[in-house]
Length: 274
Image 1 (spheres, rainbow, N blue to C red):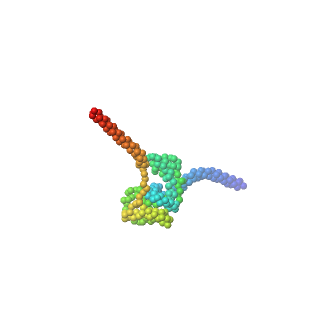
Image 2: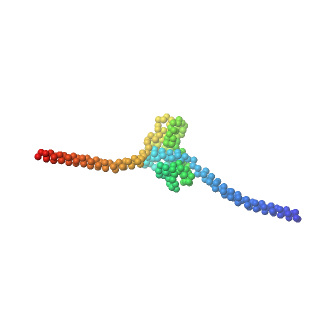
Image 3: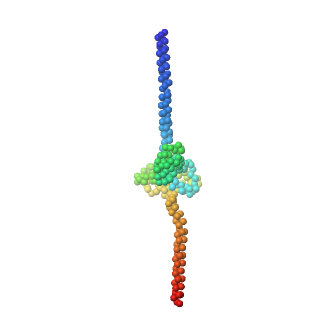
């Protein structure tokens, strides 16, 4: 009986010790899990919001669209469909670029939170770190994917022009270019669409060849009027009437003086005759 009682007590004591140890361990594990959870969540968020789309090349593509395509589209009063990959809404960075303000030579301002930066690249980093949640990451919204068709390298890197032409790459870019012309300006959508379709082929697609006979952007670009030039022109127009008025009064004064001298000389001769 004593042996049985002792064994029961030993078993009970061991069970009690195990219960206490197991009850004290979970808080430590829980604290560890709680501290590790935010790091894991942050890593997941960073992976989820990583954009595999070059901002620089997307900006170059939009610059080309805005300067070498949109003036002619506006002239035709043609509305590009949102299904066209050249539409502004199909640029993942378009909203951020519209909230970028260049105040001075060394001053860039974020339109979302009003923070200021010395260079544009730091503002871009700010967008990536602080305002990535405002990006619409829908499929097919990376303009950088169209750079081959739009000749982005011509405005990004002048050294690229000296590289040897690759016929296979030129053929792929021409195919992409022609598919953009077909989807954005279907010839069955009316005369304006037909003219823009033909224009797009001449402006962008014909240059995708290794012969070197055709040059991109052969139809020209948007003409920008610089602010200093505009200010000088307005100032000239304002000052020109004053210059004419001064010359007129000056000549009138000279004529008046000469007539007065004539009168004096004539009166002097009359006095001498007497």
